[in-house]
Every structure is written in structure tokens, then in C-alpha cells.
Amino acid sequence: MSTRSDIDQWHKDVPTDSRGPIRVGIAILLLCLGGFSVWASVAELEGAVVVSGSFVAMGQNKQVQHLEGGIVREVLVREGQQVVAGQPLLILDPTAAEARLRRLVLRQHRLVILKARLEAEAQNKEHFALPLNVGLASESGDVAAIYARQLIELTARRSKIADEESILRREIAGLHESIAGYKTQARMTAERIDLFSQELKDKSELLDRQLIRKTEILALRRAEAGLSGELASMQARAADARERVSRAEQQIAQLKSAALQKSLEDLRATETELDDVTEQLRSARDRSPGSSFGFCTIRRAASSRQVRSFSSSSPSATG
Image (cartoon, rainbow, N blue to C red; front, side, top):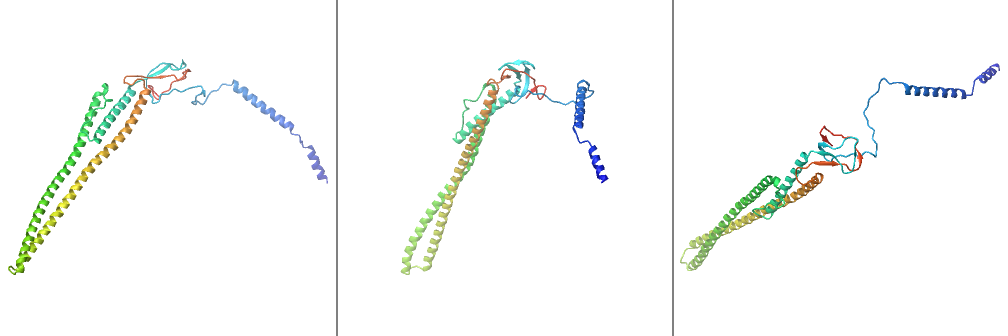
């Protein structure tokens, strides 16, 4: 009983109110934060970690970038300068653009001449004229060389087909001569058979009257049968020669058809490529003022802005 009383007495002596410790803790925390803030505002830092970064004003800056890049010849503005819409910013060196445009122009001329040559092949012409839209003075030498090569190509292809056709034509001519010879031999053999038939008829009457021996009749019949075999052989050879003539003529037709089909396929591919090159050339001329060589590309401001900075992938190039 006394033990129970002691426990109750001890429990009464234990403090149960936590507001005091909470207040003390909050005071200590505020004191620490205040002290750290005061130290951070007045203390000098002896070291720091250096990192790279940039602040970007989203929605305010406008990046001006060339579509293909190039070598900067001259910068016309400086950083921080206010520019207006249409004001030149920099000038790009025209060397790369001129070279690319020249390649496209020559490629277009080559395709136009190639198209003319393929059309001449498809129409079985021996020659084709230089298209009127080809032959600028600045590249007349290159155009002349392309035209000469295509003329040589046309002549070579026609010669190849003509040679193959000539071989088949000579074969056909030889077969026709063979057929004529077979016909002549067959006609002569038929005439001999008629003579043997007439002689056999006359001797058969003599045999009936027993004026000749039967062996003579049998000899005539054997000779007639041999001639009939020769006649059939001649006719078979003539038929085989006529079949070979038909095959040779069919080969000639297939040769011409294959050449025409190849020319048409190449013509369609050339037209497709020419359309693509023409579009590339139009785009290149639109990006570079002027339609002839010897120009400079000038980048202009799209709107009234302030120039923030210039950046490039190399000291003399702009992206």
C-alpha cells in the first residue's frame, strides 16, 4: 500500500506542461537563424566554386541564324546596338554560295542535255539540237563539253544497236538464200519425181505385156522413193530456215523494244532528278540575292531589336 502511494506521489511531481520547452526551442531556433543571417551578410568569402551558366530572358531574345551557315566577311553591328527591321547585320563571303550555285546550274544543264539526248534516242533520231535554255556565257565551255559527250553517247548507242541488228540482218539474208536454194532443189526433185512417175507408168504397161523384167520396175520405184525422201528433207530444211528467220526478226524487234524501254526509263528518272535540281536551284537563288554569280549574302534583322551577342562555331564562321 505504501508502494502505491509512493508511485502516485512521484507521478504528481513529474511536469506535464510542454509549452515551456517549446517556447525555449523556438527561441533558440530564431536566435540561430538570425545569427546566421547576420554572419552571411557581413562575412567575406575566401573561396567559391566557379560554374558556367547564362541568364536568358525567355520571350524577349530572338535568335537570327543563317540556314546553311558560311564564312563571315564583315559584321555591320556591335553587341548592344539597337537595330530596326531590315537593317543589315552581317555580310557572308559569297565563295561557297557561288560554288554551290555553279554546281547546281551545271548539273541542271547536264540533265537538260541528257533529257534531250534520251528523247532523241526514244524517237530514233541520229542527232539532237542543244536546248535553247542551256548555254549561259559564263559556262559555255562546260556546256559545250557536256553536249559533245552526249552526242558521242547517242552515236555510240545507235552504233551498238545498229551493229547487233546488222548481224541479225545478215543472218536473215543468209537464211533467205538457203530457203531459195532449198526451194530450187525441191522443185527440181519434184520434176525428177514426175519423170520417174511417167517412166514407171510406161514401164508398167510393158511389164503387163511381159516385155521387161520386174526388177526394172522395182528399181524405178526405189529411185522414186529416194527422191520423195530428198524432197521431204528439202522442205523440212526450208521450214527450219523460215523459223530461224522469224526468230531473228523477233530478236531485232526485242532489241529495239529493249532500247526504247531503257531510254524511256532513263528519261523518266532524268525528268524526276531535273525537277529536284530545279527546285534546289530556285531555293539557292532565293536565299542568295541575284540570279548570277558574284553576289554577297547579307543577313538582315527580322524586327526592331537590340543585338545581344554574336556566336559562331569558328572565328570566321557563323552558324
